[in-house]
Length: 164
Image (cartoon, rainbow, N blue to C red):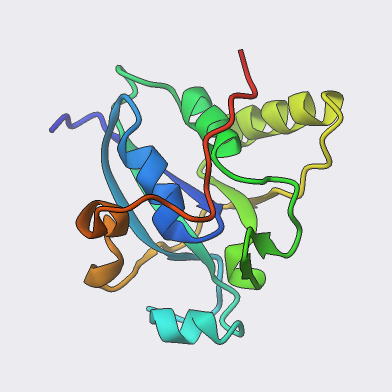
């Protein structure tokens, strides 16, 4: 594994589906699912499901910047969920399922804003939030690489080509 890996964080509904697409992406070396953006330290899945910790189900993506770019990951993020939905993702309704890009620096924020503006110019009503990255709390082990272990496909995420 390269010492030059970068990490980034995306929330797009159920973290199982988000992780499914990112773990298959070129240049992604590792993924983990967990929680970000809340006010409770080391929350459990059960706590987050009660909708009062402020956390979003989030996927941590470790990638090799020599094999893929943050920009490519942002495009994949938008192409694998309904970024127009305001109250969750597909059948998963609640504040823990909102669409959000957690940026680590101003460059990441600028790239995310660029793609939000592209989508707005295409006529989409973008519900994706932009927030500074905070502590990532890894979810319980049984949530990690869920669809790979289960041998099934995500029910609330689909790939839809949007960008050239």
